[in-house]
Image 1 (cartoon, one colour):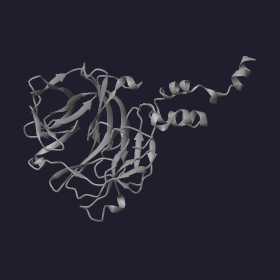
Image 2 (cartoon, rainbow, N blue to C red):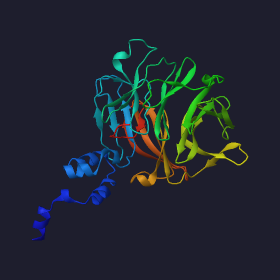
Image 3 (cartoon, rainbow, N blue to C red):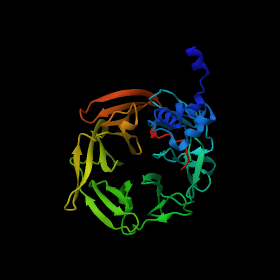
Image 4 (cartoon, rainbow, N blue to C red):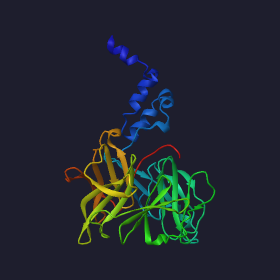
Length: 346
C-alpha cells in the first residue's frame, strides 16, 4: 500500500522552499537544466538567474579547425560539451567571471584590420553584446568591476573603457602616463593597477582622473622572468607569482596580499593561506572563488594548467600551505582557459 502511494505522489507539488534547497545543491549545470525541465512548477520555482555556483569549466577555442569551434570540459564530471559557432573568431581568448568571452565575427577578419567590431559572447546561450567600433593597437581585455562589466582596450596610445548600456568608449585620462611601459593588471574601486615590468613597481592610478594614488614596491625576489597575476579576492588584493627557473616556468607559486598600513605606504605581505578561497590561473588571468560554495573545490589552493606539449596539458592543483602539487587530469588541447558557465544574460 505504501509503495502505491509513492507511485501516485505528485512531485510537482513540492514546496518552493524544498525545490530551492535541491536547486542550490546541483553542482553540475546539466543537472540544473534537467531539473528545470521536469515540469512547469519546478521551472518557475528555479529561475535561470538562481543557478547554483558552478565549478569553473575548461574552455578551448578551435580557431577555424574542422572540429566544433568551442569545447568545454567540466573536470568535476569529466564530460565534454561542444558549441558550434562558425561565425565567431577570438583574437585573444579572454573569458570573464560571468560566462562571457571577448569575440569577433570571423567575416570581419579580412576587412579593415584596424577597425574591428568586437562583442561579449556567451557560448551557452548565444547571447551577444555588441561593443562600439574602435581602432585598437593591442588586445582587448575584459575585467570584472564591482557589479558592472568594464572592457578595456588600447587605441591610439590611449586606454579606453566601456560598460553595458553605453554607446561609445570612454577615454581614461592617462595622458601623462606612457602606458606602453606598463602592463595592466587589475581594475578595482575606480583604480587601475599597472605593473612596471622592469622594476616590478605597481602603480595605482585613478581611472577617471589619471591621478597617481600610490606606488607599491615590488615583491621580494622580483624577477622579470616570473609571471605575475593580480586578483581581487573577496575584499583582498592578491599578487600571484608563478616562479621561473632558467627562463622556464615552474610549478611553484607564491602569493602576496596587499597591505595598506596606517602610514599610507602599501606593501606586499607573503601569505601561505588565503583562507576559504581558491585561485584559478590560466595564461590570461586569475579568478577566485569561495571554496565553501562548491562541493569539490579545495580551499587554500591554486588550480592551474601545466606542460603544454604536442597539444597536451595537465590540470594541476597546488596546496598553498604545504606546497604540494597534484595532477587532476590530462587534457588533449591547446591554450585552455578557465570559464565560468552562466546561463542568464548580463
